[in-house]
Length: 202
Image 1 (cartoon, rainbow, N blue to C red):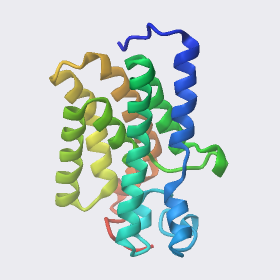
Image 2: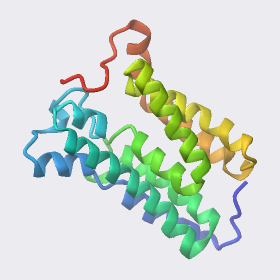
Image 3: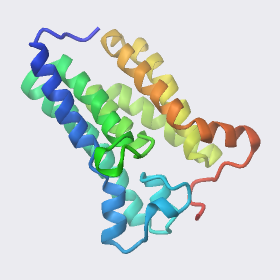
């Protein structure tokens, strides 16, 4: 379990900061800035990098991936620097919530994969690298972004246990469960063979 030795108000403060950082909808911002249209009316309607790629603009998709991952990493690193590991984990979890349920978009956000990866790289770079490798290998073989996310997140608690980071096990479990929940429709499409592949336009 993480160390929550700081006062509860400090942890709550960093949870709020994490949520606000996570809630910045970079996909929507970049799509509007680059005149790519309304992401809500393109492909899956998602605001993340995979759906931005469906506009055909690889630069915008790459920037969305970087910024969505960066906000998760920033939440962790800032909280850790100012308030320790307990606050970092709280900021991580709520940054993920912020991306998935941003107040600015009526609590209708993305699925959190890039933010999850940024969080993992910041909270423990060895776990982050294993998550990235799992995502990339699965994506290359299957061409399914959703399947890649499901395997990478689902294995993250295993990776935490393997390297002895038992303090991160519960955080990894919670984030994986949330990713599976957010990808429930994708899971159904994977099972029926109707899931869109990476790079497929809406």
